[in-house]
Image (cartoon, rainbow, N blue to C red; front, side, top):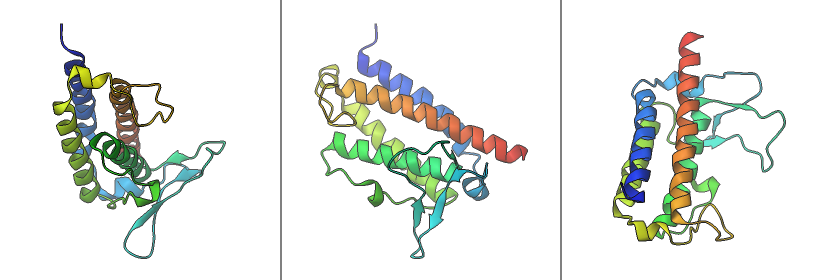
Length: 171
């Protein structure tokens, strides 16, 4: 029977391979394609950076995110999770810079994958039972819960990116 760390790593690598299928095919125009009138996207900030659409409370109806917005969102939550699990000071959402359409964002996400893989390789089954500092601030979840949450979030974001890429190609 595999150890819990092995099972969580296997699930993560399976999910990453699904995202990689789409990352390898992305074009810069995929990131800025507007899939609906009511959407969230990334906007140039006038200084060479990008700013995401954002609301502190989720609007109703929920805007359809662009592929650019989903890739920023993925990089944001993953960066902050890595901050917590590696002992770095967690950054605020506004401190997570989206690299922009195309290869820069693909490279950023692949860099987060490499860093996450390193974190997973160091974890033991005993480590999984430690209290999780994020995303549950009340401390009632473990590192194992955080790893499972990352796998679920990544799977959701991979599906969104793939779906947006395919819709854009078909449009």
